[in-house]
Image 1 (cartoon, helix red, strand yellow):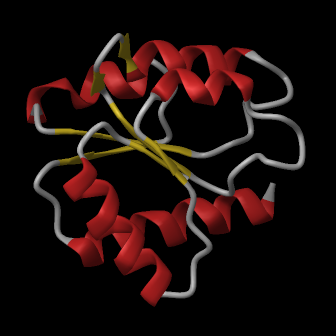
Image 2 (cartoon, rainbow, N blue to C red):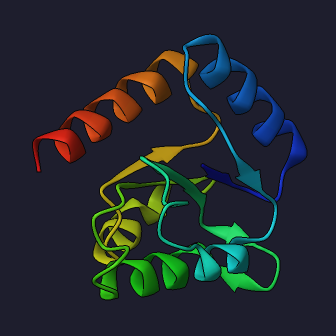
Length: 119
């Protein structure tokens, strides 16, 4: 699942992930993530830090604080390269700075999905 307010990022990532065989869903509003129901949990969440009306780090903290959603691997993304530490402190499993290389994105997603499968 992708949560980013930039339609260009969402479209590009959806196309690349679809090409690599991933089933992708997306939202432009990170607060939608607070109402994810069991059975809808993504294998990996690609979450932008800066979104209108909310901070992705707050959403990450909320998801990681709940027993039902804490196992979802979260890859936080941001155009601000200097905030990777705060993303990880919020509970993100990894961080990727925009603009990012699509192969690096695929590599990070594969690592996170493998870790989830092992858990």
